[in-house]
Structure formats: structure tokens, C-alpha cells
Image: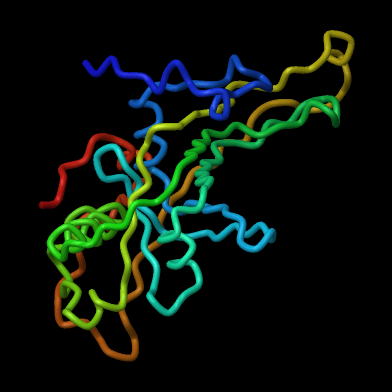
Length: 230
């Protein structure tokens, strides 16, 4: 079993508020990253903070990001500017008797670092394939790969998973003892990402069969070790 830990965490990646909810275990980090679909990438350009939501994927011990060569974002990534990448999974609404004790159950990851560009075409193709596999396993082999023009128009970057922390909450409400007898319902409303039935392209009916894995599509099941696409 992997005994690595993002520890001792650096001062900047240490969770301080409610530190008991923190983890620096790579297995916990990887499970959250592999289940989530969207990451928010924060950076500062010319003293203006920006946060951009985007698709991402984990490839071994790094996060894969991509940007069009026509975008401002690719210049920020290529400059080596400090980044803060956050991922959050919402697991439930926590309804308490007291208004101030309402909360949510969640799992979140914060990654601090700088992007490193992936420049070799074979490595770029593998990283872009990983992005598709992150969305739906097997999809990179069931779609046309990027052509030379598309590959040239796309820059791929990797953020090493070094300064990383997890913060999470689970369980029920934490009401004050004097509020327990109040006539208000308290408990948890579980939340989960789930897929509805797939809708084929109406304008151009697909020739191929519906991809496997759509029925019963479960992001939580995907938050487990994945087979690398090489």
C-alpha cells in the first residue's frame, strides 16, 4: 500500500481552520481528483485575480490542463505564474436546528504550484487522451484523435501534485445541546452527480453505437485508480 503523504505540508499548503478535517494522503487526494469533473484555476495577471473553471485530469502525480494558443490563459500558464487549482465535490446539505449550524458535506482539494508545459507531441496526445478518459473511460479510443492542426493550436500543461491539501466534512448537524429539543427537523440531504439518459445528436444521427459506460454512469465509481492511457 502506498504510504506516501504530502507531508510535512509546507506552511502555505497547511490547513489551519478546522485542521481536523484536513488530509494530506495521496490516496484521498487522488480519489477526489478522479471523481471531479471541473477544476477552478486561480491566478493573478497585472494585479487582477482571475478564476477559470475548466476540464482537467490527473495523470500520475500531476494535473493536466490545456488551453488554446489563441487564449490569454495559455500565456499565463507558460509564464510559470503561481497557480491555485481547487476541486470541490458536494456530498450533502446539512440542515440543523440552528440557522448558524447549517452546513454542507463536501470533499475538496487545493493544489498550489506552477504549470510545466508538455511539448512533445506523443506526450501531448497521451495527456489529451487522459482528459477524455477522465470524462468517460474508453472514450479516447472511441473518437477521432487530434490532428496536426488541432494539436498545434492546443497547449498542454501539467501542474505537479506537490503542495496539496484536502479538506472535507461528513456527518450530521452539530447543534448546540440547548437547541436539540427545538421543533425543527435536522439531518442531511445527500447529493450526488448522476447522469440522465443519453440524447443522440438530433441534427446528425450518430453512425456508431452508444458508448459503453453511459448506463449507470457513476462519478464516484470513477474516483478510483485508473489505467493509464499510453
